[in-house]
Image 1: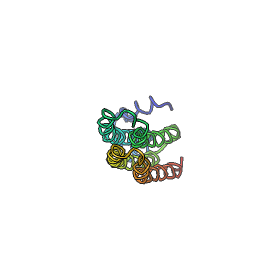
Image 2: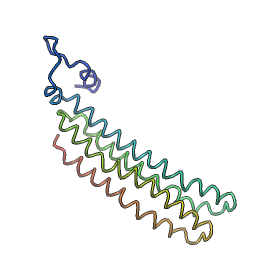
Image 3: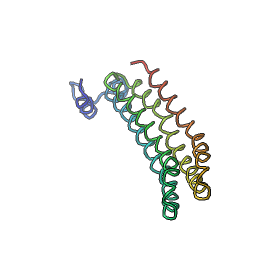
Image 4: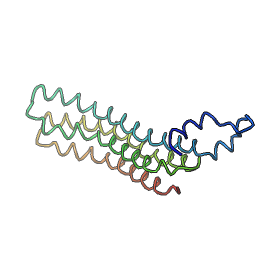
Length: 180
């Protein structure tokens, strides 16, 4: 059954007598599972991306101020600005893993399981990107005064990155644990 038919059948849950199917029949049907799995993929990409947008904005604004006075510090600042963007990629990887299994989802429980499996990478990506961005902004301030110390700011921010990676790993293991 193709995805369009699955989505269409969500809105036409009527049996041959014209009576709407019971909730248990709808729960067992694949359209709901498909939709929950699709929502899981969307949440993983969306929250990771939102976190990265906010996370990058903090050091980017601070770096622009530093660069207005010292354009030669661009190389030292680039990694600090780009680092909070990795969570968006992790969310994309989580979404990609779920989308690869989407056609195999046949029950509500499978779809719900994939939705739940997306939550670690989504939530860890959102929160860690924002806090990593704030840490990177402090690293930008460090570079403004002592450009030779930029890697200390990167290392501090990388400690936060660890938890985004752990969120991705947990989601990876959960997605692969779903019986399809």
